[in-house]
Each structure stands twice: as structure tokens, then as C-alpha cells.
Length: 346
Image (cartoon, rainbow, N blue to C red; front, side, top):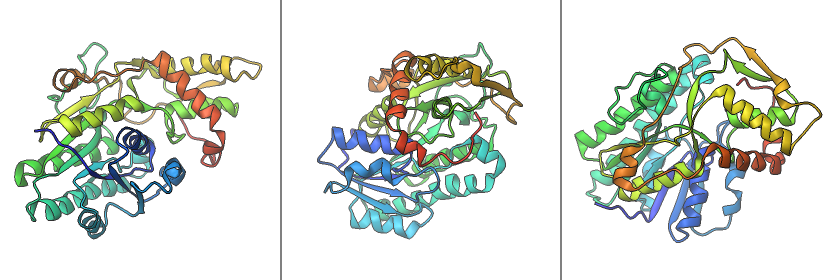
């Protein structure tokens, strides 16, 4: 059964993927109401949504998803029919250093939303609702070089506290559908990149460090393989799942762009030589450091279910999306200069 959302609660909507979703949604469906709930932790940025100030179909609420009563009030007062749940701690390095906050936000926070949705929607007989949960390919663990890509049927084998916390959240969402009948969907995506990404992640970090002529520090040999997904392709896939996805199902959203970490760094360096030269090749900034603990070898997403059931295909290749991303960061230096404070490791 198709779902036609009218009023959305978007958690984590001031973060990277969440804000791109808000931009896409209000551009595509300007008459639908969007309420963003965001705690504005370090990766949340109100400036990401400043263009919508004064828009009658946009509302920003600063608050934490752990505050179940706040979520219940928003669902009831605003007559929300759709939750799109982006809010999460997502950086693997930070999860290794401080796993507690990942368990709190990603597991308990997701459960808080589920409890609120059950009380306001199910306990009051609201049949028209949808809870969509955004997850990651990291829940599946690591692939060997020649293994087939992750499908929705792969066993969960998370290898970091971050991945384990997201896997736990996925299972909670699944349980609320099967136990209580909450209308849920889940999407597991590959590595995202694009505008508004916090500059601790690989792509923006390399761009920023190239501009600032800082070392480009690569874990190990840089041969870890990731499947890269341009964020605009991702949010379009989420739209399809919300509107056409089968309740209770999980969908993998991949970009079909497998590349080694060192390969993407070299690619960015080559474009930066063209767009922002500084006298030496940007590759001269590359240096190799000790590998990350528990570093997964390869992620790859099989998006056949998205294609076959929902007609989804990613549009952007690395050759088209990396230049777009670089130019966004070069044209928005004020945005990231306010954020960058110290060095982050690739």
C-alpha cells in the first residue's frame, strides 16, 4: 500500500544527510509540512537549514530524541504522519574512543522514538503512519575482495561500536513492526558524500585539508574499499521507500561506486590540482599512519531490490559527483571555516 505523507518529523535534520533530505523534500513537495527535531550536537548545524527560515511549511525544534514526551507532543500537536529518523552518532573513530554516547543516542534514542510512535499512533488507532529508519551498510560487517555485495539477507556482523549500535537500532525497529504492528521501513546505505558533510569524514576532510595545505593522513595502506553514494541519490531513494516501500521491509541503497580509500583521495587531489592549485601536486600532502582498530576491509551494497521493486537507480558516478562536491566546499568556505577547529584524521 502506498503512503502519502503530509506532515513529516525529521530527526537529525540539521545534520549532513538529514539537511539534504529537508532541502530535497521541500523543493520537491513544497506543500508538505516538515518539522525538524535536532539536538544540535557537534555535527548538527542550524545554518544548514537557514534558507527555510520564514517558510510556513518548515519548523525547527531543538530537542533530543531521548526526550520521549517531547516527541509525543510533536506527533500529537502537529498531527505528524511520518517519522524519518536520521538522528545518530555516526563516526567510527569517535565510537571507538567513546562508545557510551553511541549506545545512548543510537539505541536508546531510537527506542524513545518508537515508544512515542506506538503511543500516539498505534494506541490511538492511527492507521495512516510510517516510521522510516536510516541505517548503514556497516551493520553487515566486512566483505572479502571477491565476495558478492551485501544484500538485505546478509547476516548482521558489526565490527565497531558504531556499527553495533546501528544494528541494535535496526532490530528494535523491526521488533516494533512484528510485535506491535508499527508501519516501519529501514534503509541501509553505503558511504555518503556531498554538500554539508561535517569535515571529519573522508571526502570533505581531504578537500578542506587540501585547501589548508595540511597532511592528508591515510589509515594503513589506504586499500580499504567503500561503495560511495552521492547524498542527493540517497535522499531520492529514501523518498521512494517512504512512498512505495513495503511495510516491514529493509532496502539497501548503494551508489555502485566501489573504490579504495587511497583511490578517492588521489581523485580529489587531481581535481584540486585543477580547481585550487598551490604550486605542488596535492598528492604530496599524503602521508600514511597506523591503521584504525578493527578497520573493515570492504563494504559494497547490492541495490537490486531497490531497482526491481521501486525502480531506483543512483544517477551520479564518482566522476560527476566528486567535482560537484569539491566546488560546493570551495564556494562555501565560510560554512566550513566556522566548523573546522583542529585536525581530523582520515
